[in-house]
Image: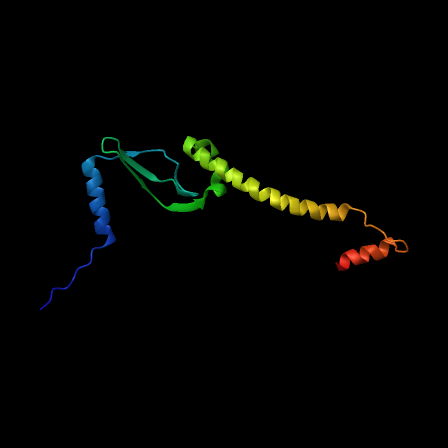
Length: 137
């Protein structure tokens, strides 16, 4: 007869992890309101996380509910938290927006200029007929 395979549950793994963390001596760090982990152009954000650390073992544990957001979405809230390495990413992001913005601004400026300009009149035409032709075009 074959033995029935018993599958490990997630709680078993969690208990194992907690016992290992206790063995290396992690301590809870209180009063941390927010943790942001920067990865490429994405920020993994934990609001009200449980943070534990063991400096001697160089181990940090952040547990809670993560939210993955784009850097530009939360930038106004975290601008004061950015370090020098992320300021370089911020400069790159600003350059990308500047490259995109002039193209869009030029297109809207051309449209606005066309609206504000006085139409050229051909002898014998009136303003009304020129306006009707512009509307049709």
